[in-house]
Image (cartoon, rainbow, N blue to C red; front, side, top):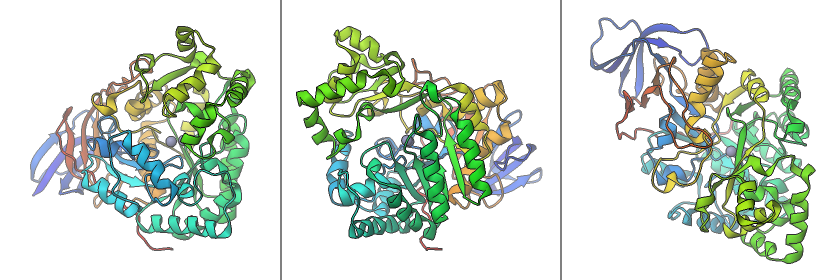
Length: 530
Ligand SMILES: [Zn+2]
Ligand SMILES: [Zn+2]
């Protein structure tokens, strides 16, 4: 007797092969049967007639590290059909911790009313597991986190013993279940690392078959060199490398992804194992102080805020921010998304030109003011990409889907601010806009990029395919009507057309309703070096 049969489904099995009609039988957390289950009995039967059955979506690039602890029901992801999130991206994970990384993280957690009960990846994953997440969680360890643990927020090259310390933390993280390491090479302290340091750590990843995931050193003027660096790291070490949220930002650089995708193809011809992911939006979302030069970030956020109190420093930075050619981005294209500290909530959702006008200050001054008032926590949404590039990257055979967002909720502490719509709409948007409406990629390919391709890339053994022996992570959707509803103006809206979401055999959304089940688990990489 099976627990559940989903009958007459149009099955897109995740492999990118053409769909077929069939029944899927589930018992416990596993898919037991795929085919015509006419004679089989089950405790429950769902008729999928007219609907698409796909593997649960895998969010290849997530930032739910903290929010999954605040709200384990992971609403904004589950509603998109996401059943597994890969966290720890852009160089920033919540473990492993040591030294100066402890204080840095504690002040971050303070902002969420959380207290830290871990230092290692193993302990952190145990805490996530104990919170009973609705989605499955897998993580990569952040290079920034590891570097901060050993070198603090300093602009230094590691000594041999510091390098050994970083390697040790990375090895422990991999043994504790991390699937690889991420970098954030535009963020402190990641951007202080030179290529040699990254090569050194990628060598460890190669030995442990972990993935080198990279927010690369630049996505605008230095995009080409930044991609070249990742290829070099893959080529020198033999590690599998992966470019996060691949894009070209700033109008003068639009179209350059044609070059970078050609570089990726070329590298693959030379046996470099390289891939990437993409989100389907024209805007980025990051902290406001990303606009400040590296030296300002040296020493950490507290030190940065002190520096900004200095009139000479301030003058110098305002001058720099005025330089139109530095960013090629107009103030009206930068929206204040989220504030935490000050009383600037009423300004969320407005662009910096509007806010400057309200306050009667120059926009360049406003940037510094907001960084100070919000103590470095203000985030912005920047319109900086073009559709042609998104389509180009999405089509590429090495590119998967990652939201670059975190699990949020409509209300409560995670319902504040004006978040990027990608937190609510990434996966349905790819299906509705890029597959159904524009025909940029087939539905088979879209689902493959959201499931098996990512599972295979990370080495998630039994996820991402609708096949007997695989875990029953499943999404039932109405392809003709699936639609992302989240917009920049009105981002906190769940998508339509995602009917049923099953995580490890249990329905978390059942015919449109959240069941309250939290059947996700923590996924850990096998611990041996290869
Ligand atoms: Zn990033
Ligand atoms: Zn990211």
